[in-house]
Image (cartoon, rainbow, N blue to C red; front, side):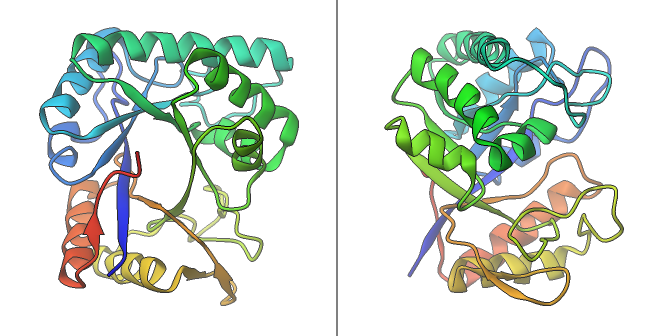
Length: 252
C-alpha cells in the first residue's frame, strides 16, 4: 500500500495573538511547517512549537516568507534575488536555533504564501530561495508543487525534493492553486476533504475547479492549520488515510 507525509503550517501566532491549535495538530501530522518570524511566529512561539514537535517526533520544516507580518506573507514583495536569499537564510538560522535547542533539526524548507506561489512559478525567485537552503545546509529538502520551478531549482542544486498536494485547496487546470481571493478556493467540509485526500494519494491525481483530472505525483499532503475547524479536518484526513491502509510517514 502507498504511504504519504501529512504536513501543516504551524507556529503562526505572534505575541498575544494566536492562530490555530498547534498542540492538537502536532498529534495528527507527521511534518510541521513552522513560521520563521517574517509572516508570523515570535521567538517564544517558535521555541515552544519546535519543542512540542520534537516531543511528538514530528519533523520540523522552515516555512520561510517575504517580510510581511501585516499581510501574513500573502502579499508579493519585489526583492532583488540576493536580498531574498539573505532573507531566507536569516529565517533558516532563526528557526534552526530553536530546533537545535529542542534537540531536533530543520529537515526541510517550504515557502509560505506569496513566496510559495512566486517560487513555484518563477525560476529567478526559486533560485534565490534554493541558494539560501544550499548555502545553509545541503541536507535540507525542499517541499513544493509538482513540476514547479521551485522543485526544478532544488533538484538542479542537488537537494532532496518532495512534491506536495493540498487536500483543502482548489486547483486550477494547470496544477496551480486557485487564488484565495476567488470563491471556492479553500475547502471546508471535512468528509469531502478526507475523501479527496485518499483519492489524491491512491490515484496521484486531483480534479480541478473546472472538472479536469490533472496529475499530482505527491510525497506529502498539506492540511492548513489556520482555517476554521482545522483540527477536525486534519483528524478526518488522517482517519480516512489510515482506514485505507495508507501509511503516514515523514518524507524526510
